[in-house]
Every structure is written in structure tokens, then in C-alpha cells.
Amino acid sequence: MTGTAPAPAYFDAARDAGALTRVAGARCVMGAATDSLNGEHSCLVEYADPQALARSGWAAELLAHAMRVHPTVHGVLLRTEPGVELPAPWTRHLTYLRHDGPPEDHRTDPDAGDVTIAAATTDQTALVLGWLADAFQAGARDQGIDVGRDTAHDHASQLLAVPGRHSLVAATAGQPVGHATMLPFTDDVTGTEYTELFDVLVRPTADVRTITAALVDACLAHVARTGLPLLGNVIHQRVTAGASDRGDRVVASLLKKGWRTEHCYWRAPAGPPANATTPPPPPDREPT
Image (cartoon, rainbow, N blue to C red):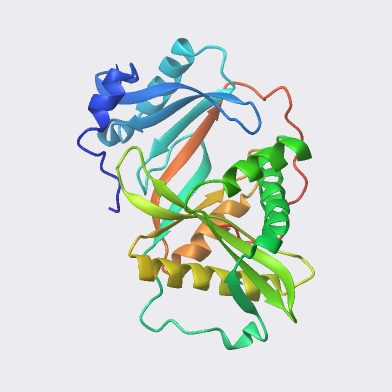
């Protein structure tokens, strides 16, 4: 198990905030949350007793309790440890994975060609800003939600201003074609410190697979020097019954490349959001 146990002071802080409760005798930490990007209101269950989750029917009890306490939310988000499987109506929302740096046999991909990767310059700030705004909009579309360009741009600007933010830009033939942006991150539940790989994006006109791999390799080399694990996430699409989720395939691919699942978020809807849309087919892009 990797970094999943709550920090010693976590439950004390949750109790002080009025978020610590019990469902059928099992300890939980929950509260109302609003997504600043799309305005969706949820009940966030940041911690639920893993032994209780393993009991048949307890996840349904938790959902019913959350909806009684927060009857106006769009749905419930639940954080779980790796390996947990929940029954319908729960579906995977986010999978967080970690990597502790390049493996011993790490080497540059010979197919990378003339790709160069370097820290983003001041002149490239606007370019990175646009790519981050693209990422915010694409992530929202995967959830069936429409986010305007101005809103996405504002969130990207805030992210660029985060202290310790580090962006890399990939170029081919001297022209920027993609980026990777990392942020310092401390997990409130476990207290674990990470370098978060917030986004990797490569223009579709470039060699997306090769350049994405080169950017991720550069990020892994960076965290190997700093000593902090790299934390990435995969967004799972909201799919109808019987449909496949591209996120599951991406997670399976990453697990073969040295990543390990750190924790997951599951979602159970109370009903479709008012601004929900039918998401278009996503680009063939491997998120982090």
C-alpha cells in the first residue's frame, strides 16, 4: 500500500472542522464541496473506513447518508484506497498514480528524433497558459460538462501563479509543440508530499505519443533529483451502462510503465448537472 494511511493529525483536524462523522458505526470524513471550474456541487467523502467499504451494502448506506445530509448536491465523491471496487451507481471519477523516478534502465527513446525539452521561458508563458486552458476544458468535457474559455483561462492563470510551479516545453525543429507542468502538492489526508504532474499536452499535429513519453521522462528525471514522488491522475469519463471508459485503458497502460495507484475517487450522481452535455469523442491522448 502506498501513502494511503491517514496522517496522525488528520482526524483531529476533521473533527475540529465538523467533518468527522460515522455511518453505520464506521468513521467517515465528509462535507459539501463546489468545483471552482464548473460550479458542480458535491458531497465529498474524503475518508471512509476501508473495512466498512469492504462490507456488502455499506457503500449504499454511505450514499444514502450523504444524500440525507446534503440533499441538494449533484452527486457524491468518495476517495478510496487502491484496489477497491464499488457497485453501481458508483463509477470511477479519478485515479491518482505515483512514480518514484526513472527505472534503473531508463534511457532516452531513440525515436524521439530532434525533440528538445527545456524549462519554459518567459516568452513561452502565454503558450503554456493556452495549453493549460485547453486541459481544463478537455477535462470538463470528459465529465460531460461545458466550461467556457474565459473560465478555463482564469483557472490556468491561477495555476501559473502557484509558487514552485515548473513547466517544461518540448520543441521540434525549434518550434514549441507541447508542455508538461508540475506543481508542489501535499496530500491533506496522508500528509505525503509530491510533485504533481498536473498536465501533459502535445499538439495533435506533432508525434503525440513519442513527445508525450519524452516529456514524462523529463518529469521523472526531475523528481528523481528532488527525491519527491511524481503524482499524476487519469480522468475517467462519465459513460453509460455497457460503454467502455478510456481512462481504464490509460491506467492499465501506466501500471505497466512503473506507475502505482495511490488512491481513487468514485462518483455516484444524484442526477445530471443542469449544464451537462453529451461529451464528444476524446482525442487519443494519454493523460497523466
